[in-house]
Every structure is written in C-alpha cells, then in structure tokens.
Image (cartoon, rainbow, N blue to C red; front, side, top):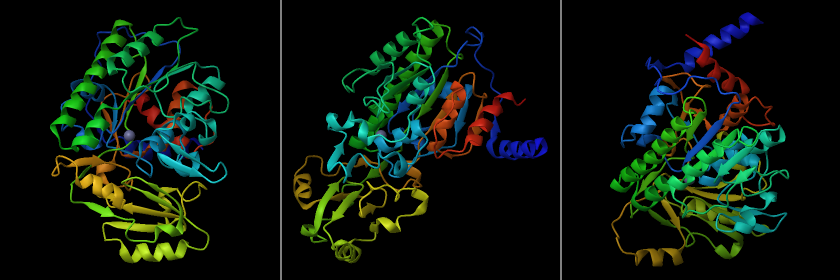
Length: 427
Ligand SMILES: [Zn+2]
C-alpha cells in the first residue's frame, strides 16, 4: 500500500512540480508557527491569466515568488461571476450547486434570481451545496467575508460570523483595513477563514477591453491593495503565518464592436415561455411542444460564431445539464461575440464611442481568454513552485485540508489537495 501511495505521490509530484525557482522567503517577519491555521481567500474578479506578466503587479509578483502559482486555473462553465465564485467555495460544478448563471429561473419557485435582486441573492433557497465558511462554522471555526457571492444568505441556516452586505462603493483600502482588524481580534474571536473581494479589474475589463490602459491601471490599483494587505500583515507579525489564496473567477475576452449577433429576429419568440438574456448566454424556456421548432429555426439562422444547444446535447465536460435550472435551449457564442435582442441593438447603435472595444466573459471554459489565476502563499504552500493548470472546483478540498476540517461532499479530488500540500514537505 505504501509503495503504491509513494508511486502515486511521485507521479503526481512529477506532474505538479514544473519549476522550482529556489527563492527563499523574506525573513523580515517573525517565523513562529501560527497556532491555528488562517486562510484569506482573495478574489480578484476578472483577473485574466493573460494579465500575469503583462501588467505590472509587484506585490502579486512577490507572493508568486514566495509561493505557489498555477499555470492557470480553469473556471467552470459558464465563465460568469456568481457561478464561479460559488464553485470555488463549494467544490461543486454550477450544474450541482444551483447558481447556474448570473440570471436563473427555477420552475419550482417560479422565480428569477438576478445579481441585481437582493431579495433573491440573500435567499437561501438558491444556494445548494456547502460553502467553506459554512463547513468551517459548523466545525467550530469563525469566518468573516468582506464580500463574497453567497455570503449574504443563511446557507444551511449558517452565516459567516462576520459579513458585509455588498456595497461596491466601499473602497478597496477600506476592505483591507477591515479584514486586518478582524485578524487583530482576540484569538477566540479571530476568524480562521476570511474573504476579500475586488471588482476593479473586472469593471475596467468590461468597459475598456482586456488590452486597455485602463485594465493596466486597474491591475496596479488592486496590486496596491495587496501591498496594503502585505504591509498590514507584516505589522501584525502575520505575514507568512496566514495562508493567502489569490484567485480569480474567470478571464476577459476582447469584444470588437462589429461582433454582434441579433438573436430574437432568428426565431419566433412567441414560442418561448421565458427567455433570459445576457450577451454571452441566452436561456430559452420553450412553451410546451415548441422546443424542437425553436431549435430548428435557430440552428438554421445562427451564424457560425454562435450555436444553439438542446440541454441534452451540452458537452459532458461542462457538468452542466443535470441541473433542473438550466434552460431546455441555450444559445452560446464564440469568445468575443455578443448576443442581443433587436430592442437592445437599436439602443446600442445610438451609443457614443461606436468603435470602442469592450470586454466580456461567460464563454466556453476552455477558451484561453477565460482562464483564471491561482496563487497560494503562506505556511501551507511550497515556495517558488509552478503547478499545472487545474479546475477551480479543487479549491474547496484544499481550503478544508488547510483548516483541518472535514469537507462536505463535492466534485473535487481530495488527493489533489493533499498532494499540493505535500509539496511543502519536499526538499
Ligand atoms: Zn467576475
């Protein structure tokens, strides 16, 4: 048994250990073992893997040099914000955790979930599975979320000990200051799991496209917040003692203005009971008996840059079709294209800056532009190591292993987490 395990371990280490740069950790802080493990999960919304090394980010680069970086982290399909944030903290594919889109219809509730509807976002009925803060609280570890999708709902009757209703106007530096204050609490009150969330890079990517000077500036701005966090942790003798997990939910694709597909002119929309529209996914719930008719119209009418899927024909690799909340028909464009209704298109044609490239995400999760980032830093992680790309559903087991708690059922592979942590022990 031990031999088999060691063989597996070697195989895995061979796969995992791409490069070791041999950096040594900064020794300016105390090297005492933390009594209890602490995780700060930092979400940099919309930080494309393609931004690394392209846009200067000295503090993030410091964490990379002293920690573990993945070549990329693969988001789940659809590559949208709420589905992927919730996959990261539950270890479940969106098809299993219920947040299948940013806009969701549930036939049993006969209700629509939208990010802009606080009454639904805070309603526990949408959030399936068990986020890591619930797992931790149920096993006696306090948690704090300075913004995270799902953290405003009482999932399984549990909320983080410390949490904030989302308010995008609260500055990044205020968020960092508040988290540092949580970490300065007496040990019995201090959270062992904390989140931070920054939307600055996603906002700039949508508005100006991933190649813009504005995204470069947004990366610098968020890097400053990371610098503020590092300085604050050093001041509290916690730098190198707490585990920092820097992640993003998805990347960002450039969307040229001419890449538009007006979709509702291509099928008889009176045959749909409900359609949910976003530029990257249109979900169609046909009236009884009309599915095949709509499917055939769209199959014939859509250009090569978009495709209509019957739910039953969705690729298995998306692990998506098992959810009752996924629509019977989905229209999905190629990366860089946007779907529109005629009414939207008329307004859109009247916009200023007709030639402006914008940015978007939500597309196929294997698209290079959609890939996200993972950086791990702190006592659980090896130093100066690059690991191969992995799926974000692996992180829940990793966080549970670091915290020493038993994970709920999930789609990740517990061996993946163990073997990443074992890199720390290797010479
Ligand atoms: Zn996002």
